[in-house]
Image (cartoon, rainbow, N blue to C red; front, side):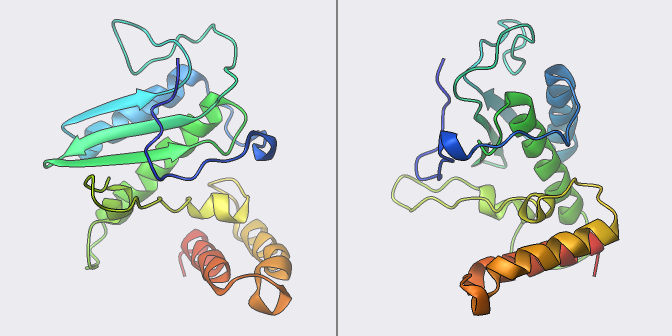
Length: 193
């Protein structure tokens, strides 16, 4: 099977995919959690795409007993209110870690969407697929991924990770302003500043 990767979304080179031991969850439980998030979000329909064989009765569930595919990428497609959305992750070497990352991303965005704060558009606007004549928009990674910490990392770990990444990401040290701003936003989001 091949992954239905959205056109225009950047791919992680296979040599740069990393193991992730932060998510000790089964493949089945990762799908179950994602299913619950999609229900809470109230989507019209959703579809999971991986390079694994999926169950015929439950097409969003890959068979758990199969070996890890060469391409561990996961793409979540859904429709809501007539709009098409997609989130993709291929940063990790295991399907379940990429799947869990997507599930946590959806949970974080859904929670942000429910905050009584007015913004210019939906928290999921960056996951909206463009029409055929627009350029693709790539979703930003969740804050914990930007900092390379677990989603529930304590404040001290978040601060230490921020300081360490600042050494290479700050514009004064050869980093880009955009990457440094993303790093600052990730720290603030993790610390609820």
